[in-house]
Image (cartoon, one colour):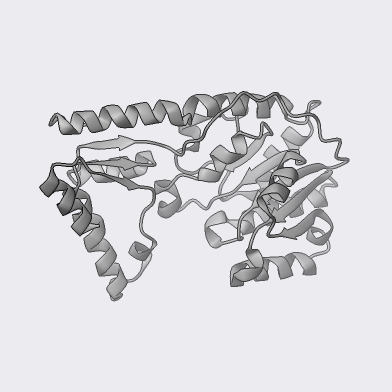
Length: 285
């Protein structure tokens, strides 16, 4: 990025660096060469640009503290065309969908334990796991763990990788969409872009209360927040929504409306253009 930033500066072109996460290499031990390379890049490269856009409040605070005052917070964004509320699924069980590779950052152990609790209580809740989990060692271990557990193998179905059309159909046929994240600096500093994708479906979204989620969505009204470390409390939240007479339909409807307000690409594009104009004029964010 350094040559590009220097070229923009030499040509008088306003340059903005977009930062969406904290480098995973910074989690390594200081003896690692990747650690020092990433650390140097993280500290030096942003100063070569006229301004920064960051995806989370945590990143905004970190870069401002490091002296990068020209910083704009822009969350994940989407287009929000008009859409009617989805029809009830008619599923006999309250069917959740998880999309991902069951990596540690998704806190699969919390999700699995919550499902085990729900199954042990006889709750009619099922979970579809969708994604490329077969291609990762953590994913394969979780799948095997579920196959070996009498409660989990009857309540969790592994669907594998799906085409875009099949994924859209599967999510549309779900009663709730679940997005778990571990309570860790890397996740606190990032923002789950899949959250915005989920909200567009108009189904109730169950998301770990990590990072900026609660900054944009009200718990119990627009999203169902799950405790990131306590599966008992997470299971209770799922059971409460699944047990509502409308099976969380109103929660999903309000979640989509909140998403359209908070994550509209047109609104944030206008903010970004205004920010860039201020940089050209020599202002500060």
